[in-house]
Image 1 (cartoon, rainbow, N blue to C red):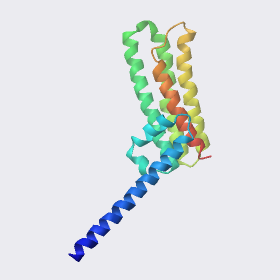
Image 2 (tube, rainbow, N blue to C red):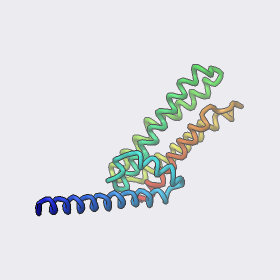
Image 3 (cartoon, rainbow, N blue to C red):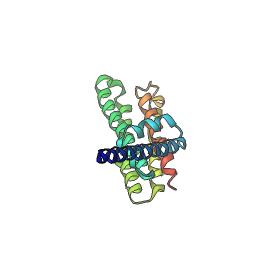
Image 4 (cartoon, rainbow, N blue to C red):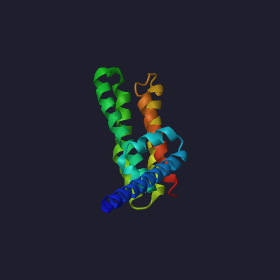
Length: 172
């Protein structure tokens, strides 16, 4: 009987410690997101990834950069689909494809490497460039007198990149 009381006490203490750790991690994530231009977006990205629960600030930045990468993949897939369904936009869509390939093959890897090597300034630059690239894609439609079918995706990319940039800036 004594052993079961000790076991119950041990489990209660273990549960309490786990709860305090989880609350502390959530608070760290919330405080980090408060320093970004989009608190709710930041929170949704970080809380959706279980790695955020024990990540430091660099880890949180890498999680959001991965979200930038995911946005890039979705946008490139949409660009390829739109080339088939809207052939009159092919030239502009190809420009956007080039822009998003730059994001995927230059900006995202540069940012990841910079963060992993402890040089966040270059990572911040990569996310700043990503924001500019998404705006360039959007602007290219206006320059051709066309309505952009990528407005929401370009805005999503800009928003996620700005969240990543803000977290990276906290490392400076």
